[in-house]
Picture 1 (cartoon, rainbow, N blue to C red):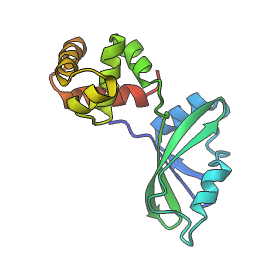
Picture 2 (cartoon, rainbow, N blue to C red; picture 1 turned 135 degrees about the vertical axis):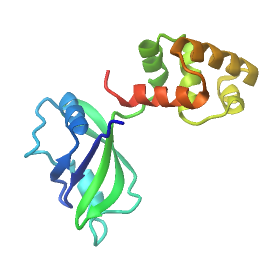
Picture 3 (cartoon, rainbow, N blue to C red; picture 1 turned 30 degrees about the horizontal axis):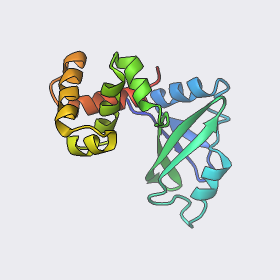
Length: 167
């Protein structure tokens, strides 16, 4: 499993990052430099709001870097003053379009799969899309066939991987 993680000090200076995170940062910001990288001011300000410097459950930050955007999810404090983040491309309303293009799905299949990736049931998806749960199930059967997978969990995992990983 590929991990896209980085650790910073309380001032937002990069201490270390996994090779996958470094590649993602470099793709988004052509000027990425390990030595000069700092978290954006708004993230550092949130980290500095408590005496320990890292806020438990600080959540997600979508930050602009270079020409792109990344989502940083605060995972916790792993050592004194060392904050761990997961790095990913932000999820967007364009998720169905990304899935459609990358996985050769129809527009409706991509919509269904994007909701599967968010953990929704067939009934919930049917209500959201204005179709019956049975129709959702029929779309899922086609998705399973096209992707060469056998179950809903595999479909969700594949969708998440496509949405998080660079093209």
